[in-house]
Amino acid sequence: MKVWRGSLLLILFLSAIVIVACSRGTVSGTSSSGEGVQYSAEVTNGGWFYVNYGCVQCHGLGGRGRDLMPAAGPSLVSTDFKKAFPKGPQFDSALVQMIKNGAIIEKDGVASMPAWNGILTDENMGDIVAYIRAGLPDLGLPIPGTRTGQEIYSSFACSKCHGELGVGGIRNIAASNPEQRTIPKLGGADFRGKFGSPANVRAVILHGSLVDQGRPGVVYMPAWGRIGTAEEIDRIVDYIWNFD
Ligand code: HEC
Ligand code: HEC
Image 1 (cartoon, rainbow, N blue to C red):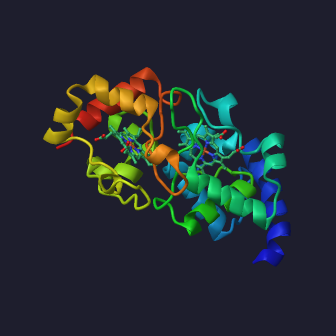
Image 2 (cartoon, rainbow, N blue to C red):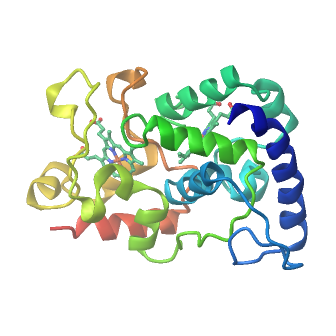
């Protein structure tokens, strides 16, 4: 695996440039000229996670970051990024750690890069790193829509931590407080009683909520204030508020 990786990635990287440059094709791994481009299973799996676990919402299509999105995440293809994380096994593990533990940017105590520990496995995160190393090619995967509250709930990855329909109960085993060892259920009478009004739910979504000050290994509630538009956040709140 390691032996062929370098040259394969070079080929993938060049192919990715071709795809991004000349196609917005919807057929997985196929350029507009119709020439098939083969990606390893790691890269295609990683691409699936990138789109379905909210990474694309903050880091943008093709990992191009802020310049393409009114959003938050840095570029994953810039020269700065490549300098900070040159290719190589130790930097690949550093990227996995970054994804696992997230990163908190101190701004109103806001949580920034979500921590995915226990939500994505090490293997899933390794696949995402392979996808990043391949230059984040457009695999033609449908990007979850951003129209209805339900679609936003899914595309911002709320469902990955809180469950479909907010059923909650996803484990956060490293949290020191036993009550925080499961990711909360959203909606229902207790939830509405606790928050009192949709505006208070909105505030948590905008600012996030740190568990154990975001200690490594602990999953916390990311802040979505700089990612969603006001309208998107409103739709998400309406959607959640009415969960059973
Ligand atoms: C809520 C927005 C948000 C989401 C969702 C998000 N990120 Fe991030 N990510 C950030 C921010 C902000 C930073 C910068 C953190 C810092 O500067 O310390 C970052 C940093 C990173 C870095 C390090 C980049 C660097 O130059 O230091 C990687 C790699 C990364 N994210 C990958 C991912 C992956 C993979 C996913 C999906 C599983 C993801 N991110 C989801 C906001 C996000
Ligand atoms: C990376 C995992 C993760 C993601 C993604 C995530 N959350 Fe959370 N969320 C948490 C955790 C952990 C908590 C508990 C925070 C605490 O105890 O301080 C939480 C708490 C909350 C709360 C407060 C619940 C309560 O009873 O106190 C709301 C509301 C919420 N999240 C909504 C959302 C919405 C909406 C989204 C998508 C925009 C989302 N979350 C995405 C992990 C996540």
